Length: 371
Image (cartoon, rainbow, N blue to C red; front, side, top):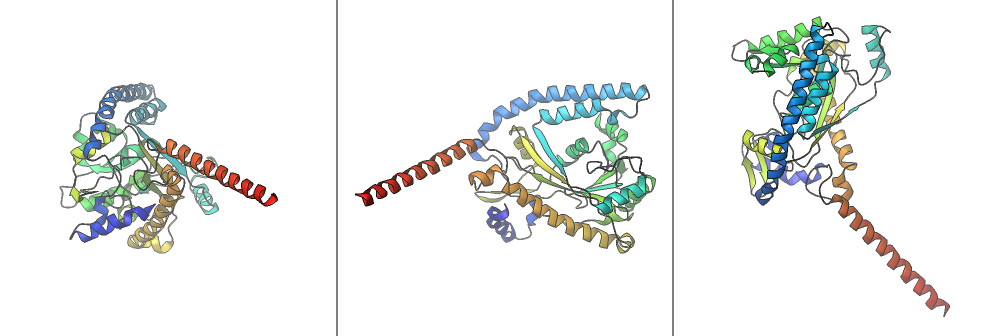
């Protein structure tokens, strides 16, 4: 799938001082095509009212359950259903696939939690930390919905945001004041404390070890924060497959060359597309060796190597099974695009006609020989 990106990648390299990972080479609407974004945007605004109402109702139902002694609101089925309705109202449709656990993983989990709980691949509470590549503003909310609200590391100022700040507190978010000179050490200490207090079945901590968003075509070197504790991690790979690539970069590739982009444009593109499809691949836990537990830099490098290979494999796998490959498109996202079905029907009709003509010519030749 990366074949069509080679020329664009070379263009990025040609622009002095511009990192390739900070350029969005993916699909988006440009020029006159932007006019078609108006109707989806209006529709999205209307649906957000419905989705927001669903999320609010779910949270309220969860709080009632919490007051009745039924556990945290964010752990309730009502809250999760409400949050999912908000996600769907925004056209966000993630597909998640859990790769099977190997025997060593099963043995590790049983050694941690005994035989009382079944060991299943879709249990995201079997490691204290989840590590994922980071592409878009959507990553956090989507993974939170899929993985039942794991903890995250966030800036201390987000605690003051109305509604969301309180919600983040209930999610046991690890708040870090990055304006403090010791913020990096405070983050490491918070991660280490989480791992020491964690137990199987409790909420894991979601970390994006690249430290920033990229275009999703590769992985930046990992920072060591997620690995300082030496605890096992659960790697996750994200690939966006829709007709708008929501990679949150500072530059984009256009027909005119590389141009700066902005959050305002990102929001407009997001609102101007009906569907935002994405694939989330959950890999088996990574169990560190004794050397890796003693050296967080080594641990981070080795997990990075595994995830780079897996990202490449998953991207190619998705491409080979995509509409883009099936119809032979050289543009757009991997998912269905308007006109793909008619292209398939047309191609089938042409092939069938070719076979009929070929069969007719063969029959005529046979009759001529008989004469």
